[in-house]
Image 1 (tube, rainbow, N blue to C red):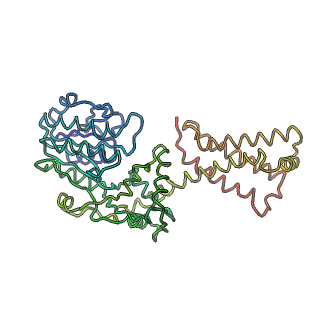
Image 2 (cartoon, rainbow, N blue to C red; image 1 turned 135 degrees about the horizontal axis):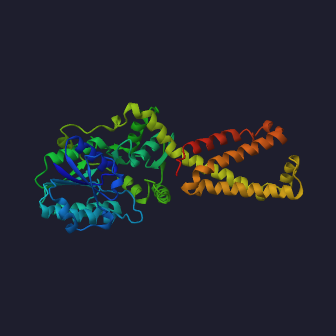
Image 3 (spheres, rainbow, N blue to C red; image 1 turned 90 degrees about the horizontal axis):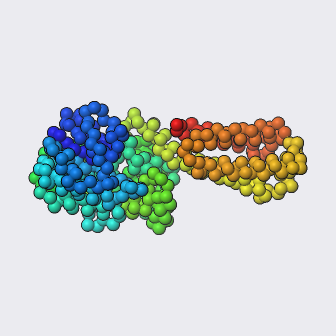
Length: 430
């Protein structure tokens, strides 16, 4: 078959493209940036910016000779130039209309579980709008509604893997909301089965795991597969606090958690699995077998770093900013001058050293939080040099601080270890 696929640079679309190519199909990938298409010479790229909402007339000549269309375009969060209405609703609707007039044999729309009459979030409402356009057309095919899709490479999966590695979690209702995670490979197999034998009219199918489970049970299963042993401590959290935290997280670029995703999680995500089981001619994979044992160590490390690195970065920024405030007067200035006198600095030189060090600490704290990407790789070695310099000066002039019971200097050693870790994991941008 010759298949037009949108969203081939995304997680689900890319996996579908690989599966179709392996089965010998010809795949035309409609993508905004063909240079991002990493599927080899077998795939053909069609430059198409769905955020510009090309109309049905634009699509018609590109559907010549096309046997089937799969729309896998989807975004979890809006960004400038990337809106739910354009990408989830208007652009796919125009494509579906063109399919109807050009006699395309089968159309599969990758929607989402929850895109139904009860939909309330902008994500679900926009998906439902395109679904309804497709259902009203005289076409064969399906509206596919996956639940939480698991893949070791998935951004949303990384969120749940990270949650699973935390020793302690606070969740609304203690994580009792129902979910029904489905593995990416099962989603792909289901789409391929629909293309091989399309339903006579557009039908709606929930792509879900074998049975509903609670989020708490899901996380416990992931934790077990990652080799972390027993279930983590789970504390209840008021829903209002969870929603407020999600709104704050939504301000962080790239965060998979925001107000809408929080609302979707609280609403639950489950459906009967019988139709999906019949389509696959087998049971969907159980969430207890999602993590391949060979990948468990790498996934465990990556998941833990996903939430500990921001925590380390925030704590390091606090250290620098607090040190600046201490230098600027929270610690008695005269006592600071006495310490500087022990190092051999007096008068104007002591004043310059005190407030100069405070300004340096302030700058490093702010850069730790807000340095632009092109500068960030250099922030860490500068911090390392400053901490090492402070440590060396104290060692030479005030060696007794090594014996202080509160360890004001020995604590510099783990601080330097944290800086080295952050530096090592910072990608070098050219």
